[in-house]
Image (cartoon, rainbow, N blue to C red; front, side, top):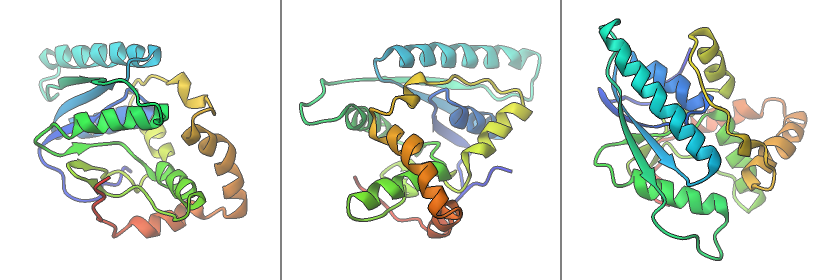
Length: 213
């Protein structure tokens, strides 16, 4: 079962990368909500592949409405890089800043698909830099109502409901700090504390703090 934290509007803007997390949530929400798919093109080869996948998925989904009237039409918005990377910015920071700058142009809340595994990784990362913190429920107009779910929940949803997704091969590149933490540090942290995700879950269950980063 997919857990939702907080109440959602009928009309939703969903940040969707084409990965298993966002495709599961897209399928979940599209059953009862009018969804605008917000895809951000990072200007990379893998991003171009994901963009084509998303465009084809939305087109096929909308064309099926004729055969399946219960389906709700999907809308698609695509954002792009607007400036060059600064010298001191990492690629991760650059992409994140550009992505969130685009999200902040919408006049409605934008849902991102962060999950409990993301939050545990963020807690490890931030702890190593002085102060442990999770991914907040809200950052300006961006909300993360699916933080209480493990990633495995979304993988299982897609498999059970035949929802396709695209794998971003760059997610395995440990030159990016986030990937290094995910692939190298997290398995060791789980050995030290097998209940780490439960600890992070409890920290977030009533957390609705605003982070204005």
